[in-house]
Length: 204
Image (cartoon, rainbow, N blue to C red):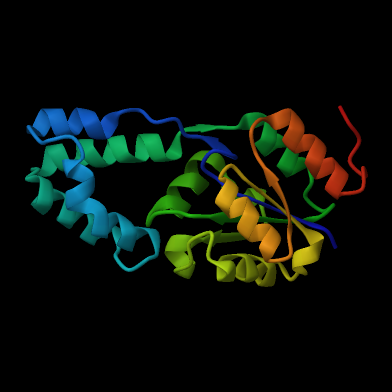
């Protein structure tokens, strides 16, 4: 059976930069880039599941000198940018494919993302298999990430189309034997998905 695997941020979600980190650096009297420098290892650990949410919050509070209210506000800003806004057209189209092909998600994520994205966007019911880096420990473009999602869906790489907005991730998928499409806008992406499914899905 054919399969479709999609990235989340920049594909199923629109996630433009909000400038929240710069605002916090100004608020805390820190130099530009200081938050990233102080938190780099925590962000990295959270992306591959080496740290849980409670530990992330603890480290943010300690490293940035935040009290309870400040910590809540900081994390709210982090998740607001992370979750962005839904790509409603693409989400609806993918939902219409259920039963016609195997559907999966492959996302470089952060601890806590699955629960928040399920609650806000229903990704847990959109696809059959979700492969989050904070759960698998594998970040794209690691070749093992593509193998893992294909195994999770029970499909061959050559039968799978992968959609992502980052060229290195698209190139890595092709190297792994998948077909791949660089997302830039919905119209071209929907057309590419239909072509992958041998035009079994009629155009609108």
